[in-house]
Length: 306
Image (cartoon, rainbow, N blue to C red; front, side):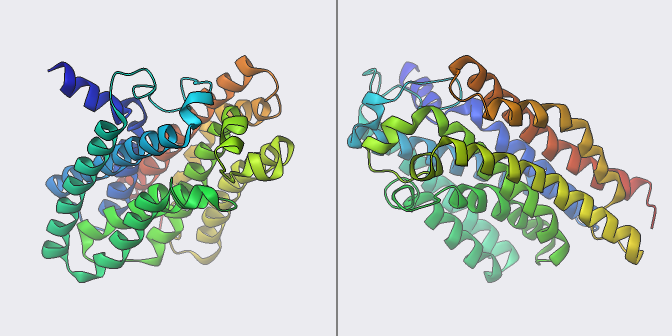
């Protein structure tokens, strides 16, 4: 039992809430378009949680092998689980956790291919490449944050929509863009405390490659872009009289206080306690924005304005 609990802890379950809100948003968009299967939603959500947990475990394995885990100063939001350097799990056990969760997620993906069709295959292949190559390859190339933005932001929303409807639609791509930016920013800000360890380990994250000043500016611009995209899509809806993004999605403005605090905190990266608070505010902003976007689609389904 103790070993099982350690295996679960290795996936960093406290971060898997992101998979839950992505499931909620993707399923809400599908329901807005007239298709919903609760069992499929739960199964796909579980598959995403396994995928996310696999990324976390595999990341711990490579971080330990490269020596990064021995230099990093952990925070509640960054630096890995700490189980391998603390000797609670071996690096091979961490890799085993990552492999097993990936294979189970893959089986769920194969099930949906059989149920919904081969057009899901390209999405799953790209997602798998983002997962498998992220730590050993992508993190050693400039601007690696695009990978989680795509693999744990945009693609899940498209995937949840597909498993409900059996098709893709430009309208779901529209709503997936904020998710991509938000997950990109989640990784970006969480990289700030690890700059020195990442530099020693040969990683080329944005803070390592361009410095913390530029990285913080990029973080703030991307956060603003999330609101710019959503407001722009809603304004387009009002202009053309057809739903590009429901007007109710402006409810995401309720998350603005946490966005502002995260942006302010990104300027204070020299103060570790303030940076950690900003990282927490950013997590709250990201989770809440996904929930509010999903609520926007639900409200538009229940009380349509167009």
